[in-house]
Length: 272
Figure (cartoon, rainbow, N blue to C red):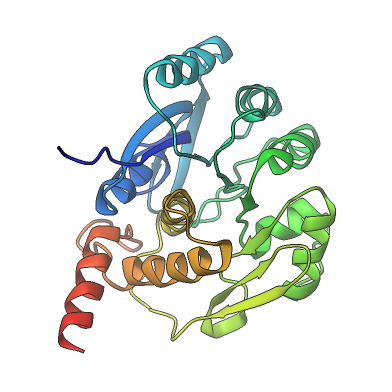
């Protein structure tokens, strides 16, 4: 009898170019052998170069997506991605706060191309007070950590992670936090753990990198990895997805490819 796949419920917004957001999360889960259910909270018109426009999904439709999925599927982990509305954040927290599964919150405040994706102070308060509070770990990049911490002039990951933690997070993983070489920074309220990168890849395949990273982390946590080992492996796989991204898609910037990255890592380990 086949083993039932791990089920990840990913909540976020669509990406019409298919590289990030909900579409990217589905591809990432498939590459890792997990099943991906979705709740779409927003629709974007975007490509690897940025977001042209966006639209909200009605609150009752968001709630129906979540409740309908959870009525039938056993959810092993939840990943929350691009959510720009405070009302949606409160709705998600109401649905998820009593669940006993890992929750990864990727607070997408800007796209990789620099398009803003939050709607001001009300949304920031809801992100801090509701979504960070229910999440196992929050995964901002440096810019997003500065926004969450209200510390635009702070760049040191040690300090930024503590400031985000003080806003209500249980653990903080700041991605691409360690200067020109890259690397992440994990803080669980007690220990700081730098996660060094081997090198920074210049493929320009970074569209969807943050989405892929947080979804990989979610799947690994659902597979009972501890937070540090999950963060280390998520960094390794996300870096491989950038290194082996889809350079043939997009004119200047291109999407990550988790499946290709994973294939290359497996091939390298077999020949290493």
